[in-house]
Every structure is written in C-alpha cells, then in structure tokens.
Length: 105
Image (tube, rainbow, N blue to C red; front, top):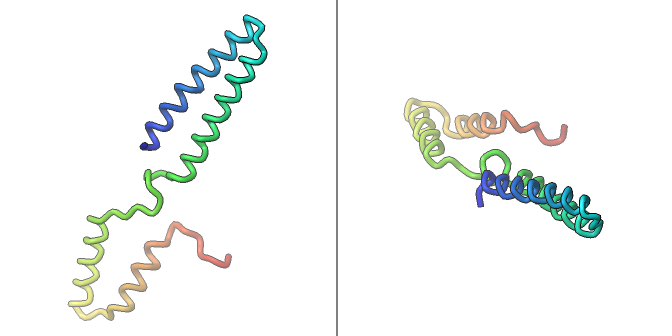
C-alpha cells in the first residue's frame, strides 16, 4: 500500500466516521456515535504511524539505484584522474549525510 492510498482510505473512513457520529447523535444513539468516533480516531492513528514509517519517499531507507550508479561512476572518474580513493569515498559519505545532524550532538 502506498502512502497516498493510505491517506485516501483514512480520509474516506474519517468522512464516514464524522457522518456516522452526526447521524448517531441525531437519533440519540450515543453508543453508535462513540463507536464511529473510536473508528475515526483509530484510522487517524494508523495514518500517523504510516506517515512516520514511510517518510516522504514511501519506503524507509530506499536507495535510488540509478543515482548510486552515477555516484560510483563519478567516484571512479576521480580515482582514475589521480584522487585518493579512500578520501573520495569519505567525502561521498559525509556529503550524503548533510541533512542528518551529526551523532553525539
């Protein structure tokens, strides 16, 4: 299931849940209104968890294979031009973590 599909399902459940709560309240069915409210709350909780797990890319830790191959090719070009391979690889590791705060801070 994609994050977009999860969001759509949750929105449908929430819409039906709110409508169910309103109708149940109108007909004085407190138990049914509470049940619809709990189902809606559960759906929203699932959305929060799915978003936290999926992140923005849809899969945690997903690797763009084409980009990885391109980086490896560029790394090989630099090494072939005379750069120290370990230094270049260290540079790539540091650059790939620019958006992640350093550990121990």
